[in-house]
Length: 189
Image (cartoon, rainbow, N blue to C red; front, side, top):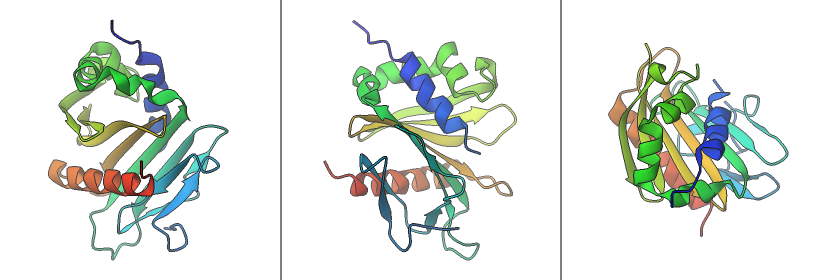
């Protein structure tokens, strides 16, 4: 029997879509949500504390290149952390997730407008414990989005180019892989 997971995924994706510097004081990781999870930051990127925030049981963390002189590609990395227990939707597995996100309902969930016709899933694949998608929104460059379960919480991450510069799909994937590795290092099993 298939598990219903549209509502928790929808909530996490919408939470991640709400977010359109400074780091952690020299640290590459720090706890959020009263220590429930640690945010890991890939080398060359820093958290923007003014654009990031925590609610009672969720968080949105926005990261960008630490400086214009940094030796990394300009990108915006958004991390959305769902409520405790929200990772249960990941039990459905990669094929079920791919089916959902390529369906009209799933594409509507990914679209900032809420219209399935405004978004296309270009690529969908599993990478370790994460489900990755390259998403194309109407009139915009494609970007990478990951969905994973971490310490019982649904976590979504997106990697987009900066406002002045599109990010090539292969560069976005490299940044996504580094961001996922930093997140996993910060939260050992």
